[in-house]
Figure: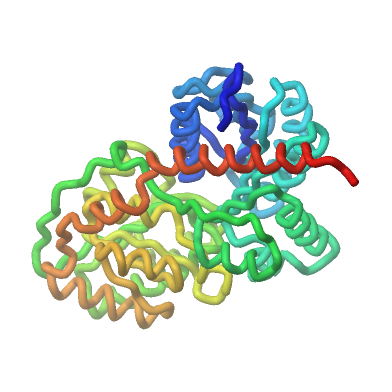
Length: 404
C-alpha cells in the first residue's frame, strides 16, 4: 500500500478465533499473524469462549480481540447454532462501530448472520467489504434443504446479495470461485485452506501386525460427513476382517443419532468425546489410517475441501478419503492415502484390503512435503495482505473519481 502515517487497519468478523482450537480459528490466527507482519493493525470480533472471561484483550500477534457475549453452541442442532450466530452478529455491530475506524471490513462465512453484520458495518462506516466463503453458500443451503420456507429464501437472498455487493469475495476452493464468476461476481480470489506446519510435527510410524488395523475419524459429527457409512462399515467388518478397530472422536449435530445407530449395530465403533491438542495427537498415534469424509449427495461438496484434510496429510498417517471433486484431487495430488467410493460397500472393501496388507498404510512423508509447498498457512497471511491492500486502493480510486 501507499505510505501512510498510521498502519492500515482491518476489522475481522469471525465465528471462531483463539483461544478456540477449531480449524477456522487456526486459519484466522495464521492469517492475522501474516497481516500483522505486513504492517496491518487488526481488530477481531469473535464470540465469547466458555471459561474465558476477557471481553477485550491483546492477541498473541498484537491484534485486538473483542469478544461478544454470545457463546458457541455446544449442543442442539441447526437452530441452536443459528441463534448463537445471530446473537454474535447483533452484538458485533455496536462493537464494530465503536472500534477505531478500519480501512476494510472482512466477514467470514459460515455463520451466515456474520454476513449481515459485516455488510451493515461496511455500509455504516462507508468501507470496502471482503467476504470469505469457507463453504459453498448459498449452494450448500440448497443441498441441506435450508432453502425451503421464507427464512431459507431470505437467507439465500442475503448471501447472494452480499456476494454481489462485496468489494472482494474470497473462496477456499477454485471450483467455487469459478461458480461465483459464472454468476457475474467479478472480484473473486481463491486462498485455500491449509495448516501451520510448524505446529504439527509428523508422527513416527506405527508398526502394525498382520491381522490388525486401527481406523480413526476425529472431527465434527455433523450432517456434512455422512458418518453413518463408517458405523455400518465397522459393523460389517467384524465378520470379514475381525482385526479392524474403528474409533470415532468428536461432537456435532449428528452425534446422538450416530450413538444410537452404533448401539443398534452392536457397538462396532469406539465413540469418544471431542478432544484437542496432545490428546488428539495420542489418537492419531494410535491410528493406522485416518478418515476424512463428506456425504456424496450434496453437489456443493464437489467444490469443498475439509480443512482437516491438510492436517491429516501432514501428520504421517495414511489417509482414507471418502470424498469427491476437489477434495479427492487434493488427496491424490499429495499422495498420502486413498480416495474411496461413496458407498458403504466401497468403504468395507477398502478397509478390508488395508487390513489384509500391513504395508498398505505406510507413508513416506511425501504428503507433508506437498502440504508445505501448497497449503502452508504461513504464506496465506501475506497473500491476504496483498488482496486487502488492492481492495482498499480500488475503493479509494472509485471514490475519488469525479462525478459527471
